[in-house]
Amino acid sequence: MSPSAPPAEVRTTDYHTAGEPFRIVSEGLPAIPGDTVAERRATLLGPAGAGTAPRPTPHDELRRLLVREPRGHAGMYGGFVVPPDDDGAHLGVLFWHKDGYSTACGHGTMALGAWAVDSGLVAAPADRDVQVRIDVPSGRVSATVHRARGRTTGVTFRNVPARVTARGVRVTTGLGPVDVDLAHAGACYASLPAAALGLRVDRAALPELVAVGREIRTALAGHPATRHPDGPLLSGVYGVILYEELPDTPAGPHQRNVTVFADGQVDRSPCGSGTSARLALLADDGRLGKGRELTHESVTGTFFTGRAVPGAVPSEEGLVTEVTGTAHRTGEHRFLLDPHDTLGTGFLL
Image (tube, rainbow, N blue to C red; front, side, top):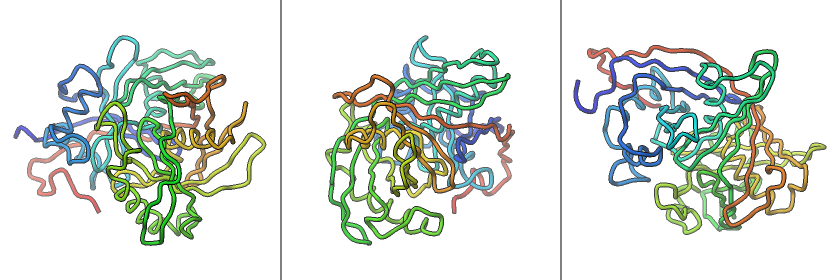
């Protein structure tokens, strides 16, 4: 096997969180150098760091094998389970998608919480919540797994603090100029109303939404507000959230969104970390008063609910938020790489 070849066989456990897939690799993964999750991600990215293609390693070839057709697809998402930074967390994870490795993933955190309980990694009672602490490249997050009658009924993801970094940044697109808002919530998201570009958030408009999302992400490359104080590996726009206002619910704001992330990938869920970014912006607008929560709907019709943690107030570090949704196991897989298969690790369409 060449130095950059993936393992000949790999086993995964797959979940979906509100429709967005998450493929978990927890066994048989070769060790990744680094003392922390963030350092291990830096190892996979290589010396050039963020904004470049990952270096050719067995781990990255494994990512390609699992995310590309015929074993995956361009919308696949997953994670390598790695040791946590210290004994304060149950596990660490390196999130991946078709273009590389992300700094945060809310839907993946929810799936990992459910998996940790389902697999017995974290003991859970039949009828009480249990917290799973997870180290991700952007920091330590948690997934509170809700249990009833011996089964998992939902998961609440508590993110690193989310903070607004810029409002009304003018961007030129093929559909005209538009003003976007920027917020960091483990990753940097640009938000704008789809109506500002004459679009609706629905499946019929997906080609236009994806195209303009990619334009906006490219246009914001290097913008000062996209830089993270902890360095370039946490900087840069990860996702563009195009949202549509719906009538408020009795609990608070109601929005439908499509999140276009990486290089044109569409989140099938309402986007976990992106929901945190939306919460920071809504709080900044004064729309998240005490006890109020956001009903966040995806382009596929699934929902998350998000809120500021009770008692939390925006600060220099940001606003602590929680996002609740459901995660369900979809399968356990044994993937093989036939050495005679001329497609190798596969292809993307």
